[in-house]
Image (cartoon, rainbow, N blue to C red; front, side):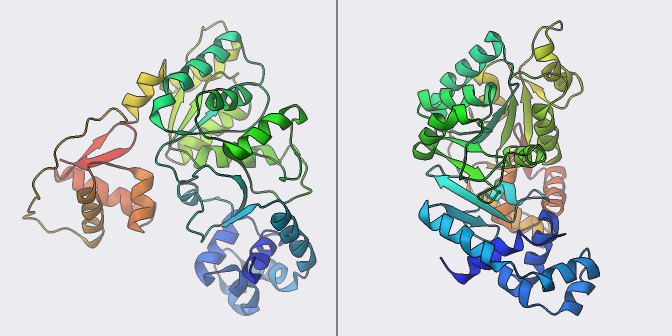
Length: 365
């Protein structure tokens, strides 16, 4: 481990510096070490930082705790993922409040081409259980990574069904990697380490406190291509995750249920308010995510007789290099921010150069 990791861990420990501030600071200074060596006046003048946060940075001296965390990381062969690392989940990186540092034990590719998150109620019905199991059985050949929260209920069912169908599955935790919650899932967690992974933004010695679960949920929502709500009441973590998925421009799907069933009330609400697309089976998901598109012969190279902006040229070149491309891939392959990509896509679509497909997938016309 390098000294850089010590500063990366320390950055997440500074009082008054949250995820958004940390990300802005790294964008400004390039790495964590440079933030600590920056002049106080420069920090104060940075937008969103000011004197209080600048004082917090310059007065921070608890590097001993960072050193103990690094010993824990080394002892248990944990992979730290800082937001400038190439292996950091790129889909998550484009969420405005993505964690500066993640801790990972496992072997699943967090930048896999197809990642879905499955969430749902702890108090599931047999309908919810059967639907989740059948869905993942039908997705067995799709070579996907399944994300969930290792909680009781639908989360646990999703992880177990993924393992049964030889799909890598990652549990996102609301605590450090030195403990498992709920303790009843300890055996399942061990299986995930060898056939998927465990992921958290929390340091060791962090308990599964109430305020940590919404933070966990934003990782579940941001790391994937699509959020699937299997069964949910009107309130709870699953609805929070679905709302976060929408705010991150993810595809959100919900399994409908009977209008008299309170365990389906949340799913029905998401569908009714157009916050989720109705999902009845894996075939629906494949179609809406554009996973069924047949391979066709590449078209002859086009010659454009119109002027493109620099950003449009970047997007066009990426679309030329492959038959179709998903929105998150465009974000991190283009190097452009989300508003730039959206503007270029709209312009190219209006000019008839590209087509917008289901699942936020784009291809040349």
